[in-house]
Amino acid sequence: MSVSNNARRKGGWGLAALATVATGAVLVLSGGGSAVADRLESPSAASKIEAVQAPQKQAYAVLERPQQAGDALGTTRVGPFGTNLQLARSVETSEGDVHVVPGDDVVCLRAEDEVGHGYACGPTDVVEDGVLMIALHDQSDDSVTVYGLVPDDAGDVELTTPDGTETLDVADNVFSAELDSSVGASVQTEGTTGTYPVP
Image (cartoon, rainbow, N blue to C red):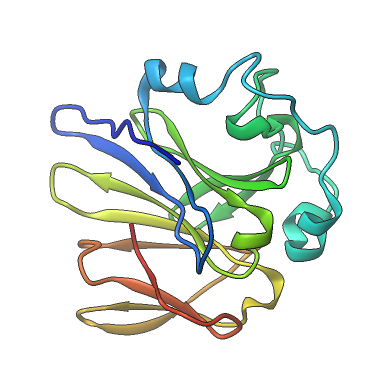
């Protein structure tokens, strides 16, 4: 299923999210701004989980570690698919901070820009075998900031663009990169099969 609400503002950023995984059902969410935020985070969207589930801890070390100051998102609202924003883990990357948010058999990556925030979500048993990515597109120059979530056994993460291939740093299961354009860009990992196009 998919929900698409790509945000745009004059001369600024638009946020687009895509769950990119190897196989199976893919859940896609995108958006920004207060109207979209109201749809993505709801007081009663679904029953939220009260603890990180065991398979999520096993797949992602970032969800197994104890929460630290700044991890939990300061809201009592429920995220998409029943994700619990109070169980989130914040990850600092070279391109900005993102949150890994667990739900009931669902894992989400939450990113923000000047417009608002968006989510890329997928079933735990699917995304743990692939790559979950979210991309922030600058409408003024077509540049893209991409964040990705990979499992513990992913190994090296390589980004391929028309200009060549580079190995990305991974911290707390998350990588990031800034691209001139997402056209022709893809990610591969040492521990998974397949090539994952950048959204």
